[in-house]
Image (cartoon, rainbow, N blue to C red; front, top):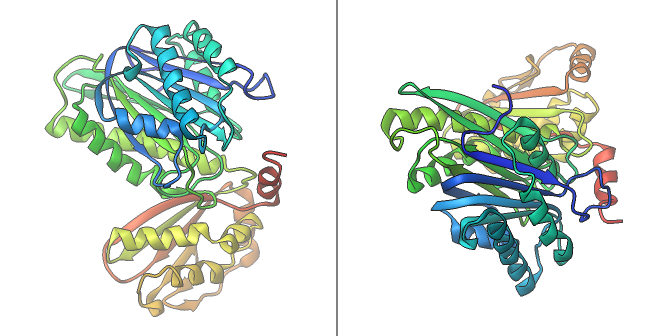
Length: 397
């Protein structure tokens, strides 16, 4: 479906001066005309930002009206003043949209360890509230206002029909580096006009994140501000979703989250390839995830892909040190559909042809087959290039 907000939602984004470049928006606002059921999943890092603390305290909920998001400053490692600033952002937003401060969530992303420039943020909140709209341009502006080193806004929208009613979902996300499982320097807000109860919303979001955002990595760095928020305002009408209707909604929510999750490593800093690692034939899904993550996080695997080198030895050996027991004599490996390794032994293949295929396609698929059970997992990452090193070496200087 075309990029559009679900019923009853409005959005906006603008430039407040937090970032140096006025062409890069740095403040976003998403508001529902009526209170939302809200759920959240957050970073597992013990060092977490003030906005994460605030959102954890306010979700799950059945009375959230909106989310204010700033980029350029993470408000992380900022002590008591950081907590006060997050609260002040919520209060200013509540005043601008006529609700209670406890009905507003706050997300931040950017440089760690610097106090929020509230002299820019607070007037910006009043100004961005004046720009709230329901159109596609407003949605895009909100997605841009979340961006840091992202090269493009990340938006995913879908709809489904339940009992004759059209239900819409739309998500926005940011992230390009400091990306590791259990979330990373990524933010996402998924909006829907479905009617959910708070417990179901929290459970569904947790499950969807496990199948999507927790299966991506750029360099394995779990950051301080990772947050995924689900807002459901019920504006589509009808009863609270239960049973088969709720299962159908869950499937679409997972699809939205997967779309957003894949767009993050695809936009990884300096990346030239999006790598999909599939592992099949494990005893448990946890085993499959562990092997896939180990392969995805291997600098040698990532640099081989960057160089369009079908170096299967790096992939197989990464699986071997993942800490999961398996029979190495039964392992098979495919790269972009070409069999490179079969039942513990290399096979003849045209290395130049495989390399050319890798160079011609931004998407690289690694499929590892074991013979231990029926469980499988899929993991997304990006390659590792000299441009990634340059961007992160120059991030503050």
